[in-house]
Length: 90
Image (cartoon, rainbow, N blue to C red; front, side, top):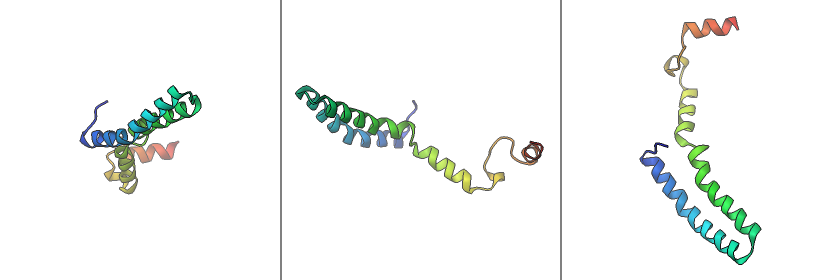
């Protein structure tokens, strides 16, 4: 995974909140509260994993911008008269 500066800052911000929660979850596991400890570990892992793989702000921003731009300015392959002719034939 190639992380840029903003991705590293986002990961650090996620870890600031996820690490104390994971620490508390491990303590709950050692005390014997398995369900609570395991549930909190899942939440802590999701706090780190979800923003990195599913909620990528760059991808969301690119999708928003490409939706707002006219078709000629999107830079997609096959744009123009060829794609219009192919879409009419289908």
